[in-house]
Image (cartoon, rainbow, N blue to C red):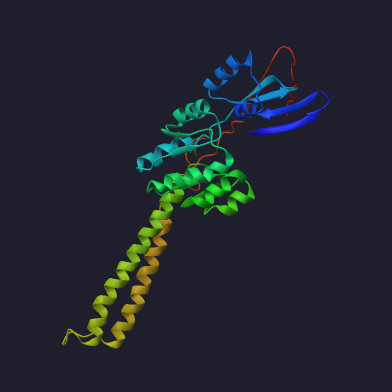
Length: 282
């Protein structure tokens, strides 16, 4: 919700609209400006002092360059993408529209994220949660698969099943693709081993006499079977992952596998006339 501080000028509250409502602080003339900023897709932080709302700080969340491509690729694989955020509904829907996300769960408190994940699981869905903060840790643990951003907190990384070391959202697609490729190899090797034993054991036991398998041939066949399984497993290295750049090839910034274009978050302060606040540039 926000923070509270005691100053010589009175008690200061810094937080979202819910915090202002809890403290019964009316926005007054800033109501219209707050609504406009939220409609523009910005997160509005309210500032009050001495029981009066004295200003607004609008923060524009920067979308990572590969986020839209990652969402599109997940939807191609018939996966539903849900935005789970503590931001207000207007801001969340605006960003979700830019990314191509239809389902939005906004105004979610930190302690409610795990509950939302559990609700989705209650509908019979397998849920993968992506997060980077301390507040995301319970939800990452609750999810069937937790993806932690490498640049996030240690608690989030310890709670997750997969850590995205490059902090690139497109690596989620690559992780799923690599997991599926690994599972395919496991199934292939399992069926090869089962098929070989179903045929070789009866031959060695003389079930199909006079067609028998001599001990020498059986030993060579077992070694050959092991070799086939090992070679098939090594073929996993040939799996093509769009998010991993091939050696010697350059990828344009913003493209999957290419260097991310830094987009710092933008913030603007909207003070009220009676008690303007000072904004420190960092």
